[in-house]
Amino acid sequence: MQAEQGARYSGVAMLLHWVIAIAVIVNWRLAESAHDGPREAGASLMATHKAIGMTILALTLVRLAWRLAHPSVVRTGDLKAWERVLAKTVHVTFYVLLVGLPLLGWLGSSAFDKPVDWFGLVQIPALPLGRNPDTGETLFEIHETLGGAMVWLIALHVAGALKHTFWDKDGTLWRMLPFGNPRG
Image 1 (cartoon, rainbow, N blue to C red):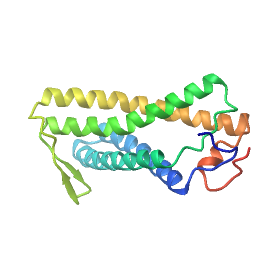
Image 2: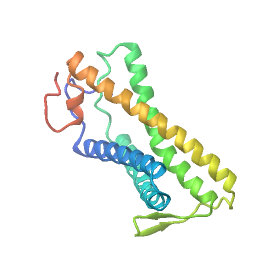
Image 3: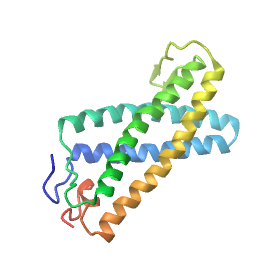
């Protein structure tokens, strides 16, 4: 379904988009800080990183359910074919990573037979993989590599939004914000 020109996303879609985006950026910085800092501080930062990761997973599943129930308002009629393909590829890849990265992290922790502490409120149990530290290390390496890909994907997404807003002047960015002119 193609939405009318200038249509905004729903308030729920906007909220989920921005909360997930901020959580992903915070989580990336936590992981970077955990690797660069002292070991004791790193363990605490990684615990927070894992808790935020599980939150991102839950919010992404809510966002996917919302998106299935509420059709997207993204216009495609005025986009070039390559822009449509790139936009679709970026969005699908985002969803794959937003689900896959937390699952890989949870699987990695599970391979060490460790639960994920969710902000001291709930212990999310390890998945029944059996203890296998080698597998855990491999999963964490894949997680880290895909996390780096996520950062590049964010940069591409932001560049696309800025191009459409300031170069094409089509109002794309304002569709995901409760202010501004989405009509371009």
